[in-house]
Image 1 (cartoon, rainbow, N blue to C red):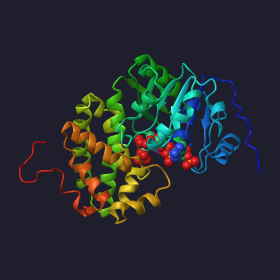
Image 2: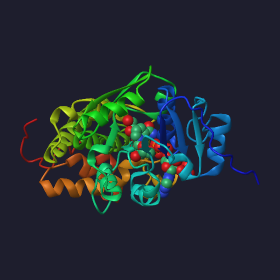
Image 3: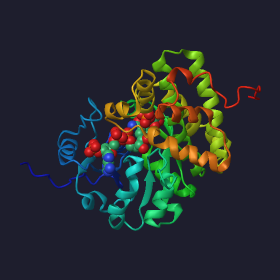
Length: 345
Ligand SMILES: NC(=O)C1=CN([C@@H]2O[C@H](COP(=O)(O)OP(=O)(O)OC[C@H]3O[C@@H](n4cnc5c(N)ncnc54)[C@H](OP(=O)(O)O)[C@@H]3O)[C@@H](O)[C@H]2O)C=CC1
Ligand SMILES: O=C(CO)COP(=O)(O)O
């Protein structure tokens, strides 16, 4: 049996930690490393930690991508978190709370905690920043979220991309944006945490709808109709929860909606396409070997929408397709809940 080596990092820049070595955690570690940070990654599987540290590769999630030398990984949380100024979280949303309970005592007292995730917790209906606040009990000014049109593999290939960093503290958002901006990744800042987080959650649901109609074989008119009406649903919902409408027409809303709905790299889009091709929910879950957050977020988003009286006919129909009560081919025409009356756009 090969022993896991201790974490060795060049002392070149500010020390940061990334928890989660999937496609986004690893890509974000590369972003931070290429921005000059010294990056410790937590990979729960020792063999993956070894590959990242020794070969500077993550062949499971980012085949063909080389990681910079200031990125190293370990399966041992204490050495990953030691001295971290920023802690970036990139595990599946539904597992965040249990993971925070494990790492709580290990997070340095003054560290900024940054969510890279795009989901809502089932049961509590909490956004990821709310789960962080509840579990860590830290000042909300020490929490930031990152969102935007950020398909991991494209960024890992260093294709120019923009993102939004949001925090209740503009100083915290700016500090994270500085740490995470490099020649191919540019971070903008805002203080609309609600809008920035919900943008990432909601576009996943519309991307599932797009995948469904794609799988059925419908064309561009159908998809453009769903994207456009989907943005209305996203905006109505987020604004009802206090988001600014301009956040939804920016990178974290429309920007991410376009990227996710257009790309076969999107796991949500892919899951939808499988549904549209006739696979049922369980078959789709079994075929996905990466996180498709939208599948778990549908129910909590519809609960949140109902609580504010927001109508979300597209998301509702995604839920029905997932439940097997609506045929995928019947999703597209029903862009409104009421077909007896003409509706304003
Ligand atoms: N991929 C992308 O393009 C983007 C993703 N995001 C968001 O980032 C978040 C993470 O997604 P992504 O990296 O893509 O997902 P992946 O499926 O690629 O990776 C998931 C990671 O979490 C680990 N993991 C799985 N289950 C658990 C658990 N119960 N406890 C601890 N760790 C666990 C996996 O470990 P193991 O390998 O051992 O299973 C893996 O390291 C999601 O919220 C997603 O929406 C945001 C922007 C872009
Ligand atoms: O959030 C993403 C792009 O911004 C990634 O989308 P998927 O999770 O659907 O792959």
